[in-house]
Length: 87
Image 1 (tube, rainbow, N blue to C red):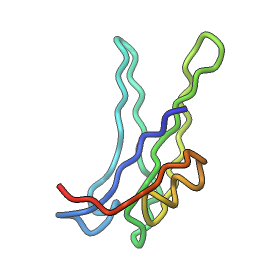
Image 2: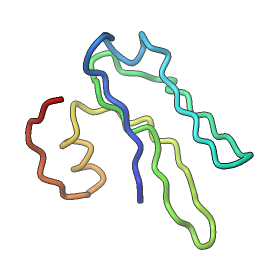
Image 3: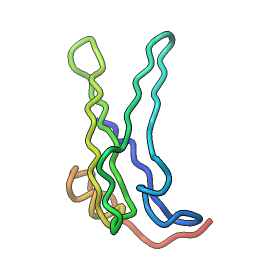
Image 4: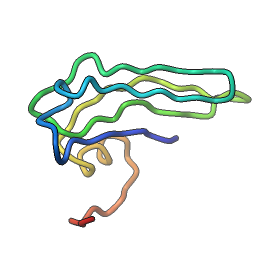
């Protein structure tokens, strides 16, 4: 399983102000995922989950808003150890 996420950290107040969306391209196929229900108080969003389903790949829109990486990790059960970092 793969999750694709985005976060607001500098330059924007929240997801509602940036008209957030994701486009995934695979050759001729294009999948557009708009973020339709942003929560102005939460700055981390799991946009979609990608899973292998037999011989195909399945993409499921999540649009799940949480406070940070560790909360998303807890929900999806990856088990990472999160520590503060910087650019």
